[in-house]
Each structure stands twice: as structure tokens, then as C-alpha cells.
Amino acid sequence: MTGSIRSRPVRGTAVAAAGAVVLAACGSPSEREDGAGDLTTLRVGATPLPHAEVLEFVDEELAEEEGLSLDIQEYTDYNQPNAALTEGELDANYYQTVPFLETYLEGNPDADLEYVGDVHLEALGLYSAGEESLDDLPQGAEVGVPNDASNLGRALDLLAAEGVVELDGDVGRVPGEGDITGSDLDVEITPVEAAQLPRSLEDLDAAVVNGNYALEADLPENANVLAWEDSEDNEYANGLVVRSEDLESEDVRTLDELLHRPEVRDHMEQTWDGVVVPVGEATE
Image (cartoon, rainbow, N blue to C red; front, side):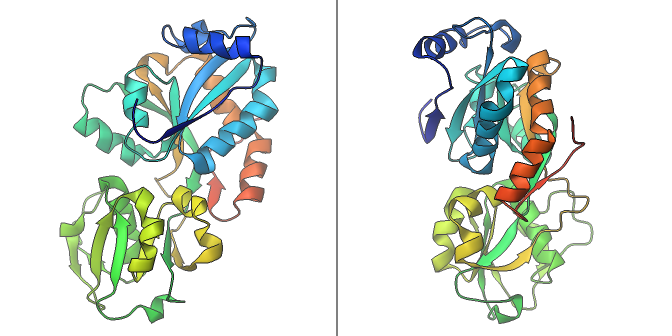
């Protein structure tokens, strides 16, 4: 793979880590054990915040007792992890929503990927570097939104809910720019790659930013939050994704169960209160 990727090393000896790298090239997850022979290594792709940090917590606190070791591969954009999973470079990824996966599969019909289940919701926020409230947005305000289809639609839903734009009453599940029918402020919607929105905020009046990128840029502390996405009945939760052949893998199911442990939920709430919201049924 080329592009923006960082790898967090798995815990254990250098021999175990080397064994994991060699064995990870073939076989299903349950067939790949590390060099010590008692832990199964799963290679999981994730964006750094909060996904990779959640996985790191699981790896350090819970995984070993369940026979797992996590090799966490970090990606700093949304474009690579599904391709890496499809190509067998990963056993799972953890960074996306169901609508995002559906959009990806529409454009990549040969990718046989399945969503395992919801883990957490990252509330989308409308941030501004200069304005303190929605009432302060000027006429003709330029508002940045993510440029991928599912997150753009999600951003437009948030802007519509706050009265910044109006959407066509017959809009589908994922609205696009063509579904905007009006705006009292005559706002200009500017699609930007999601990862670039925080650094573009100084050039915009406001921007709708995904939770992970907002956390990486410390936006909740360093910018004004004009509005939050409603977390009730929200279909944009994040969860594990695997190849279809591994959907019923015992190791994948174990990892999903660990992600729903009370300890993990508490970690999310204590570390990212209000931005990262645990969802799904808790496990013991």
C-alpha cells in the first residue's frame, strides 16, 4: 500500500511480531497464530482517533485473555482501508458507517465486504473559527462539508435540521448538493476532503467535520461548536467491517464482543465525552 498509513506494533516479542507479519499473508483469521502459538493476530485498519485508540485499549486491556493480539494499521484518510481489506492486507477495518460502506460497494461491486455491527457514534459537529453561534453566520456564509457522498449527505441533514439550508421534501436517504432547495442565508456549500476540513476551517465561515478528524485537530477545545448532530436513532454509527467469508469467524466475533465490553464503553465516554457515543448492546 502507498499513501498515508502508520502501523502500531503489536505487543509481544520481536519473534512473535515477525511471525504475525509472515502468517498474515494467507488463511482466515482463525488460522493465523503469532509466533508464540497461543494468540491469534488480527490485522485491523483504522483511522487514528478514536478508532485506533479504542483498538489499542482493547489490545492492551482485554484481547490477550481472549486469545487475540491486534496489529493495528492506521490510515489517515477514508480511501484506503476498504481496498486493503478487499486485497487481504487486513482482516477487518474499523472506521466507517453502513451508508459509507454501501456507497463504496456501489462503486466497487467486486469488493465482498460485510458490516459486523455498530460500536460507536461520532457526532458530526458544525464548527467555526470565528463565529460563536448559528445566529452569527453571515449572509452568503461559506460552509465546508465532507466531499464523499455519505458524509456529505449526513452534513446536509445536519445543516437542514439547524435551518441553515432547506432540502427537497422528496430527498432520498443520502441527500446531495442538488437536493438543496434554498437557504435563508444564501450559504455557499463547499465540499472538501473530510480529512482536510479542520485545516480549512480558517478559510471558511463554518464547516461540518467528522468526529474523528475533529478530535485529531482538537476542534472541540479550539473552535466554536455551533451545532451537534442528533445521536438519537442515528444510522451513522461506526463498526467493524470484514470480508464476507470471515463474517462468522470466531475471532472476528470475539473482537466485536470486546469492543462492546463495559470497560471499552467507559473508556470512550471518559476520553471523548459527547463526541464519541457508545452504541449497540453492552456485553459482559
